[in-house]
Image: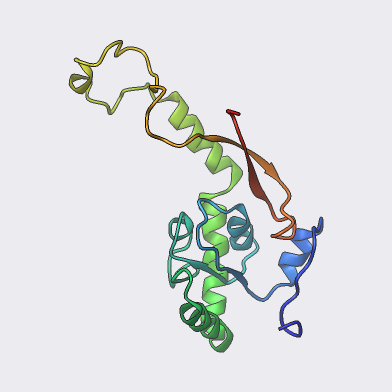
Length: 175
């Protein structure tokens, strides 16, 4: 494996490393929204991810990347074999991935979406008749015992596991 795979510690030269790669594989079991996946697409890398979490929302199987089943070495190996043996597929994925990253995830585009979301009046698509019997319907709140797990605060930071490409660390808001 060490002849074909390079494992590293924390790195600051991620753009240079991404440019040296032939492909990007993210076999995570669960990944909500991986920044490193967007970095791979923006770098124009043919990419493989799993059909779990938010990855299928980012990768369009066969169009901007390849999706395999989570926890399936057979599925992962088949996707990797496809990339290794089909140079036309690699090139198509490379071109489409970069185009999608620039079109959908460029900073200006993301900011425009956030601005639209924030400037849309609350309740625009919400049926108020459902709230008539709810106390204080003009206030938004969550009851103490809502049944949901505690939420954390995300902080961007370098990931040693991903070579510094960017992940999130969670710290609890409550003790």
